[in-house]
Image (cartoon, rainbow, N blue to C red; front, top):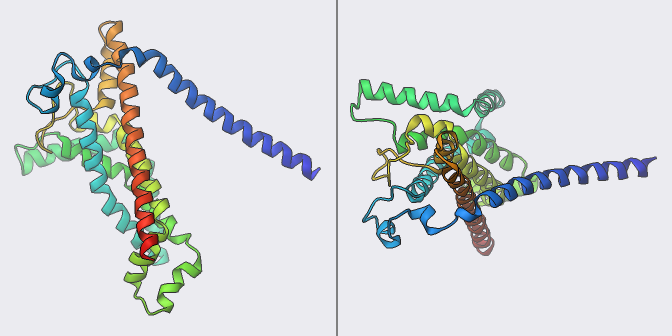
Amino acid sequence: MKLSWDKAFYLFAWGCSLVLVAAVSIILGFLVVKGYHTLAPALIFGDTPFWEALLLRRQVFDGLFPAMVGTLCLIVLAIVIAIPLGLFTGIFLAEYASPKVKWLFSLVFDILAGIPSIVVGLFGFSITLFLHHSFFDRLYPCLLISALSLAFLVLPYMIRTTQMALENLPMDVRMTAPSLGATKFQNIFYVLLPASLSIIVSGIILSIGRCAEDTAVIMLTGAVATAGIPRSVFSSFEALPFYIYYISSQYADHSELMKGYGACLVLIFICMNLFVFAHFLKQRLSQKLLYRS
């Protein structure tokens, strides 16, 4: 009976994995079939010459280039803001907080993780209006507000990932450096963080994906349809998620809808490259830390 139950569980787990792989394959295959024929330089740069657009000499009006640049700027800025806040908060909860403080903060961050993104976007928009009317009359929804809102949205993932990665380290790893006379600060930054680096970077990768796909937040805090390349963090911007939403809800003909499918493929390609870069960075950091040790 034990063997039959083991086999049944194995088959059920294998079947669930196949269902998930099949679902992902169907979605990707559908997007490729619908959008592959739109993948051409004209989809990215429109009627603007390649070098003129790449060197920012001429604005691209009928292509995805501004939305691609805006998406990359948004992701990088949001992650740069979120990483130090999430990392050090996770360190505090894992290594310094008392049980009561840890319970309270963990509850707050779990609730924050469950807040819908549209609520975060509305909050960012409301804060922008308050600052505009009370302190900075030239402040409007912009790239910086969107990045701050997205950073606020992904902070719970980074915090909980860092906290769990540190708390789940084996006791022999945690106690080796203190037994040799290292301080708590030295133990954290020279032993515990390098040992948990792989899991922490995995949390950052998930946060990158969340920043790249979210539409509700940026729709309320700075993304517009024809902003062009953002000149500063206080400028409006274009983004691929908002473009996909806009073109799929207000397309004029079939060709415009096909551009939306092409934009989906471009967004997936950008996310894949960001994930590959994050994995490459993780491997390099792991090798460097291994070499130092």
